Length: 245
Length: 307
Image 1 (spheres, each protein chain N blue to C red):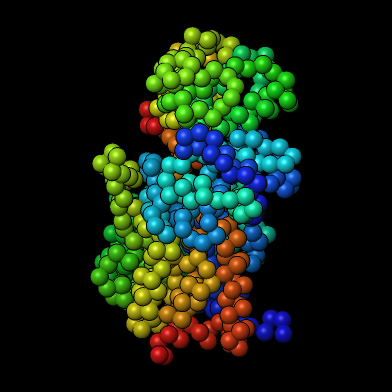
Image 2: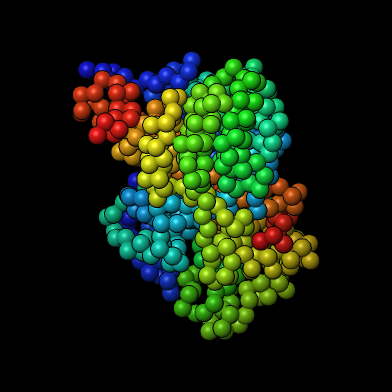
């Protein structure tokens, strides 16, 4: 489906917020994603998967980082141009148990889907949560709520976001996380030690996004492969064979 | 002047309503696409390669994009023949298009076992014998590179099935026409070509091959001229229909394959980008023929050889 760009602006270092007109034809839940065709022609060939940073009556928002050719071209797109979106796809964070101590933990561009999640938690569920976001440096920060950690100490807690949140976690905690693999691996280890629950949104290279190419699989503890696009991208962290990531 | 163009294609005893099929490994077990397109519009579809036992596939990373293409090393992950028959086929009960089962084994016995298991499954119209997967360590392309092996494997499968047998060929050989001829001598009712071209991408950050399997199969628009050339070469050497596959992402390229000598075509990687691409290509072929005042799609098959 071709949708018009309302806004595509830089919000932090190499980071852009893309707002697209919402046709109000479908609903989307936090953690789901869209496959976006960058150009009308065959370069780049494959669609790119992007999580949903916000979804309201007027707009679908995607926050992305320029990491390669595809996102570089995307950053040059202007208001009024059209983008071809497929979605929303995949399983999001699902139902959230209200009586838990909820922690949103995001790293880098992985904080994006947690923004939409926080809106839904507040407005639909009316539940309290604490949010912790980690970035490398201050100029990468694009989130305006929660607590911030930076690796270089230029803003907030100096160090890793996992170290910042760790003392807060206990058996009644539910962590909802998205971020770089290394961060999630550490977080999974912490959650395992603290015996708390975690739903984690994983990132993977995808060709189709609809479960047929089998390119995006992750290894699960039962020594099977699951598709990030269909069975995920949000998983119970206990399902994942973290050593293989 | 509706329906003035005849798009039907005959392959052995089968009649396809148009020449457009989907390529194995790019269309799942077909039901996945119901949400995005009308499966009835297709001539048929080739389902994901099936083995005797379920296959887990290769470790990730399995895919990487390249300029106008992609490299994959999935490793034939599939549910196995029994679950395919029990769980996947019933989902296609109501679909009016030919289902072609792509079969894969590590030795001839396994191909034969698969043919036996499918023999009485009426919903499966034909078998595509995969002698060309580059991403599994045993079988696959090892068969497909040797004319004697292709001959004996094709004749073994033929003895165990009454369904048309299509042999899918690898481009990773010196003389694809010799392999195609061997398949025909073994009794193949058609050959499909090309499977993916073996390639490698190295991640300069880690200084290692990007894919866990190290090498992968290159597909997508980047490879279509190789496929068209090989179909052209094979057309001059064999009598049975050719199914052209490799990098088709619009009707112009589909027409090129037909003109090179393909009676049918398979759409692969393009399904990933646009789940409705097959329907658009069928429309494009029809419009071309109408515009050129050509009555039947068969009239352009191999027409490039007249030049």
